[in-house]
Structure formats: structure tokens, C-alpha cells
Length: 437
Image (tube, rainbow, N blue to C red; front, side, top):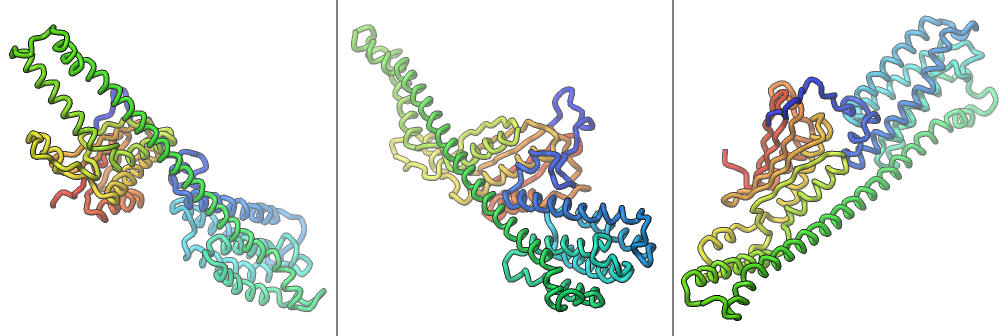
């Protein structure tokens, strides 16, 4: 895992999606699951919506008109609003979405702003743009709509409605009955929440469908590649048969070779051994589920701009052929180890795909090595990069590595190990069955 000549880890740029919403690095978002991409997109829209009211509110501080009975208190509340939104979106950038506790804090903060700002607004400006707390209410409504998973959860909009009615008790009912005027003023607040709720659900459904279609396309492409490889292997076998067995038989038939001689017998024995090898390979059938899964992982990584050098050796099939007593001992040794169950093959392939995603996101490299081998019934898959690596004692592995790689292998009785050091790249080793501790 030594860096290649001329490689300087200090010169490698940091992954640009980390610690942000990911819009500066399309590869970072492309490597995300569909739900994660939708959440980050919606979070960006909510951030822009909040800027649309915070910037004019900041401009009101420099107005020549008297807009607030206590400009100092308004300035303090506005400073708190700015600070909270910075904290909120830094939180979201690190985690990818809004935690429930962040939504509760935002609702509480907006209620405080509605009471505080409305109290210091001069009477003529309580319903105009200078009362920025009303626009903060719209942003909170959109946030509630975004995080709701079921329509019934939209009822979380009700507490801010009560606080708004209390804050504006003095100016409600001047043009319409109080209840009707409250409904008119909060019409946009409710509809913002409903619209964002349906937008997120629609985008998530479409993204999931697109991911499913992409997976099907990759599976079909992997199957076509496997068929082409099998066809090339058959052509290679035909050529080899022509150059060995057929050539020997033709020479004997034409009288050019004396089949009683020792040299010809040795040649015939070698040709017969070659034919038996072809028969055993043909009985093993097409590529294994693990091989197909690894091929899909490589194809998916190529879509992220990652060049993967892939080599597989001696991977067993899911359904090993029965061992004939006529087969030589070395043939039965290779056949007695069956391939992994389908769920194990899937787990190893998906864990490998996540490891390649991590290379694309974090290594600073666009090249990786994937090897797969089976020795004495133990399947080992390794993903290696020559990126900047990290110090495991100081940097805690991310959720993807803990859950999608290590956790996934443990669930099927396998094991996963991460070998890395600063400047030395990363090696992720997957094994099944897991090695005893």
C-alpha cells in the first residue's frame, strides 16, 4: 500500500463533499443513495429560502425610517436568528438531513422571534416585510413539511399558529373576523409545508425508481459482459482443441504418428487431461453470483470516475458440480468447496461497492485495486487505494464503513478489516467465513 512514485499525499485535495451539502463535487452526490441525494437537494432549497428573508431583514437595520421601538432588541434577535441558521445548516451539512431535535429547536426559536420582533415593531409595520419573524414562520413551516414522513405529522404546524395568534392579538380582527384574518395570514405558512412535503416524497420516489433502473441496466450489462467473456473462452478452447487434440488425432489418422510410441502416448495423455479440464470448467456453469456482484460494483465505480483494476482467482460457484470418483484427487479438492450462499455473495458485493464509494469520496485518488480469491474454503476480497489514508486511532470510521461494510459482513458470518495509516492509502479486507478471533 505504498504510494506510487511521485505521489505526495499532502498535495491531494480534500474530498469536497465532506462537511458541506455536496454541490461542489458531483461525484460525492452521485455516490450517495437516492434518498440521501433528495434530502441534500431539499436542504439546499430550504437554506436558500431562509436567505431570502434574512438578507432583507439585515438590510432593515440600516433604514432611515423608525421601524422598531427598540432597534437594539431587534438587532439582538436578528443576530440570534443568523447564528442559529448557521448552526442548523452546519449540522445538516455534517449529517445530510435535519435531526428531529434540530426541528424542535427551530420551532422554538421561531416562536421566540415572533413574540420578540412583533413586540418591538412599530404598529404600522407589524404586517410588512420589516417584521421578519413572519417570514421565519414560513421557513419553519417548510422545514416541518420537509421532515414529515406521513400526512398526519403536518399537525406539527399547530403550535406556531397558537404563538402567532398570541403575538398578533392586538392587530387581528381589524379587517376581518379574527379567526378568518388569522387563516388568511397563515395561508402561505400551511401551503409551504404541504408543498414541500409532497415535493420531497415525489423526488424520493423518482430517485428510487431511477436507482432501480440503473441497477437493472448494470446487471444486464454485467450479464452481457459475462456472456462475451464466456464466448471468448469457448473460442479460446476451440482454438486450443484444434492445436492439440484435433492435431494429434489428425496426425495419427493420416499415419504421420505411430500411436505405439512412448512420445505419442504422452502427448495423447496430455490432450486427454486437457479435455477433462474443459469438461469440469463447463460443468461449473457461468460466473458466480459473487463474481457478477463484484463486476457490478466495478461498473458502478466506473460511473463515479474511478478506475478499478479487478482480478479474481479461483472463486467457487454457488452450485458446485458433483465429484466423480473417476476424477483425479486434485479435481475433487477444488470441487468440494461450494460457493457462498446468495445472501453472502450479495453482502460481499455491496460491501465492496461501498468501499469503492469511499475511495471515490475520500481518498483523493481516481484509481483502486480490487482482488478476490478463495483459498481453503475462505473467500477474501480486498479493495486497496493509494490515497491519503487516515489514523484509525484519531479518526473514527464513518457510518458507511461501520454499517455498510463491517456491519453487513458480520450479519452474514463474515469479517471485515480496515488497514490504513496517514499517507499510506487504505486496504479494506473482506473475508467469509469470518476468521476466528
